[in-house]
Length: 432
Image 1 (cartoon, rainbow, N blue to C red):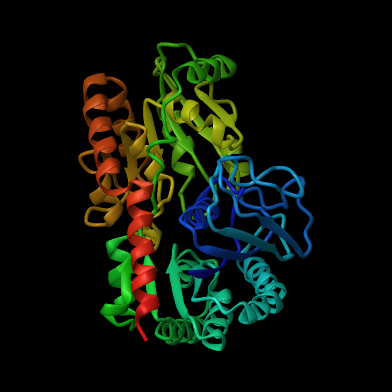
Image 2 (tube, rainbow, N blue to C red; image 1 turned 135 degrees about the horizontal axis):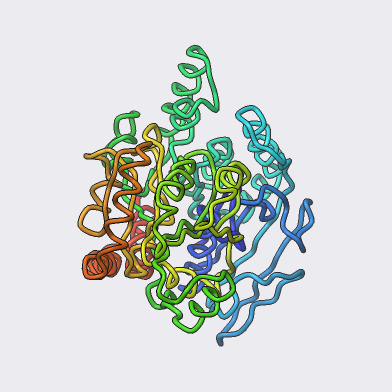
C-alpha cells in the first residue's frame, strides 16, 4: 500500500506526536508498505530547530533493506536506527516559523507557516497516487490539504486526532472570542465529516468526535502504544543516573518526565515538593523541556528535594523510568478528555505507580485508578498527600505498579495496536 503521512511533528522528536508518528511510519515500512512523510524539522518540545537540521526543504530517503542495519541519513542524528525496512520510507522536511516563546497568536502563525510551506510538497504527491493520506491533528491546518490530495489522487483520507486542539485552545485561553470560537468550531465540524475515517486515542475522544458530527461508523479508536520489548528498566543505568543527581540509593524518587507545556498544570509539582520538603526520604526529579519549564524552575528554586533534568535520549529511557518509584502526571481540569497524555503509556509499562490529577469519571482517572492514585486537579495538598502515602508504602507501590504493567501488556502493546491499525487501513482501502 502507498501511504502518505502528513503532520508537523516527527522523529527524532522524543515526546508526544512526533515520537508516535515516527514509530508508526517505520513500522508500516517494515511491514512492506511504501510510506512517504511530509513533516517539519524537529523542534519540539524545545521550541527551536534541532541541531543538525536545516529549517528548509529537504528530502531524506530510506532505501529498501533486506537486513537489519543503520538506515542512511544525510545529517546526524540518524532516524530509525536498527529498523528492518522491507518497504520504503521517504521523509520530506518543510520549513516553518518556530517562536521562542509560543503564545496563542504565535502558535497559530507557527502552525500556518508549516501548512503553507508543506502545501506544494503535498500537491506533488498526487502524482505518486497514494492509496491512503493520513494526517494528524494537531495541526488541523494540515487537514484540508491532506483531504484534497486524497481526493485528487483517488485515495482515502484519514484524520487522526491526538488532541482536540480547537476545544483545548479556547478552554485553556490560548484563543478567545465567542464569535471566533463559533466560526472555528463550525469549520472543524464540517472538515471532520469530509474524511473517510477519523481516529483518536481514547474512548471519550471517540465520543467527542461523534458529538461533532462524524458518523459513528467512520470513527475508530487508535490509541497510543508502548514498545514493551524495547522498554526494560535499566537498573545499572538507574544507579548511575541517581549518583549523577546526588540522590541516595535508598531515597524514594517521584518523577515527572515529558513535555513541560501549558496543558499539564505543572505548578502543582513545585507546590507538592515544597509541602514535602521535610520528608527526608523523598526526592523529586522534573525531567523535560518546553514552554513551561522556566516557570517551573523558578517555582522550584531553593527547594533541596528537587532536581531538574533535560529530556533524555531514548537509549536512557529505561534508566530514567527505572529511577522513578512514583510517576507524577499533573493535568489541568479544563484539558480533561480533550487530550490523553502520551507519557502515560511509558509510566504504566515501567511497572511503577502513577499519581495523577483528574476529576472522577474522566478517562484519565479511569485508567490510573487501580494502577496509581488520582487527586483533584489543582489541589496541591491532596497531590502531596497521595505522593507521601505511596512513598511510605513500598508494598502498595509494588501492587499498583504491577497492575499498570499488566494493563500496558493487555491494551498498549505496540505490535498489537499497530497491527490492528494496519488492518483498518487495508479494510478502508478495499472500500469503494
